Length: 79
Image 1 (tube, one colour):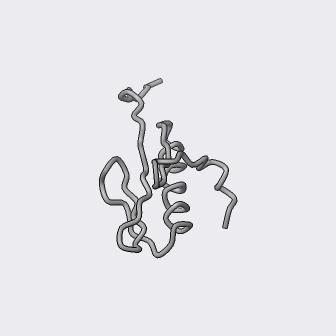
Image 2 (cartoon, helix red, strand yellow):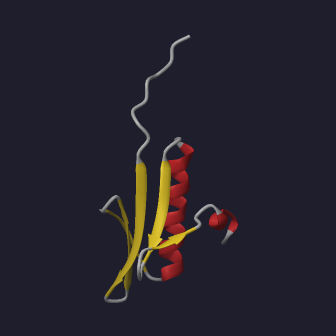
Image 3 (cartoon, rainbow, N blue to C red):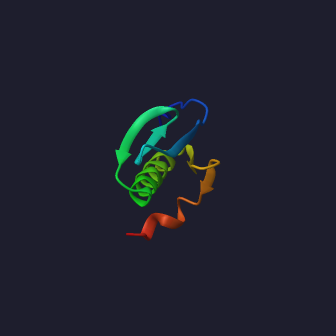
């Protein structure tokens, strides 16, 4: 049986911020997407975080102001 070696687990941070009324999401400080509303941006960031975790890595979602940590797994069933 062949096992594929994997590198160390990496923490991925999704950040939701607002600038001039546009909500933006970054993934590890790289542009991920712009959204018209806070809920849309949060849903997108949470979806991204769950996708990252599906690969075995860790992820967190931080929302402005103050980088509040969002429980992204709880939003999995939210519309």
